[in-house]
Image 1 (tube, rainbow, N blue to C red):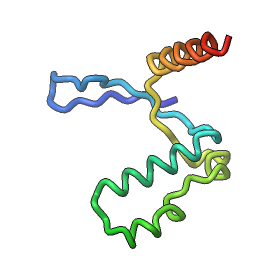
Image 2: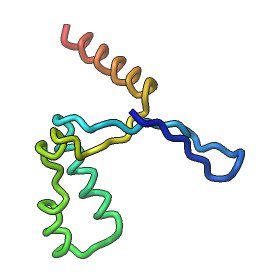
Image 3: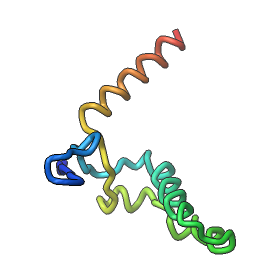
Image 4: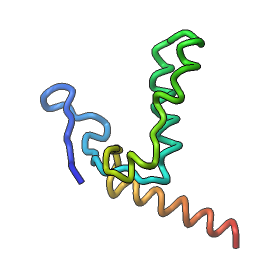
Length: 94
């Protein structure tokens, strides 16, 4: 896992300046494809052009499995949030 620290102005940190870059997981393919599409759409392209984009921006599980796709991870803080959400879901089921 690679770690990076970002600074806007020397001495003024971002809200969450530390993040981690990790290999994407195969089960994240649909979410990553959706993120790619929404990121492209934010620039105001016309509907005809955007209709062509889902196939071009699709993140396929084969690329993830080959180690060609990376994702940003918040590290321990994000893991803690996921554990809490999972625990809440389990409590609701019981």
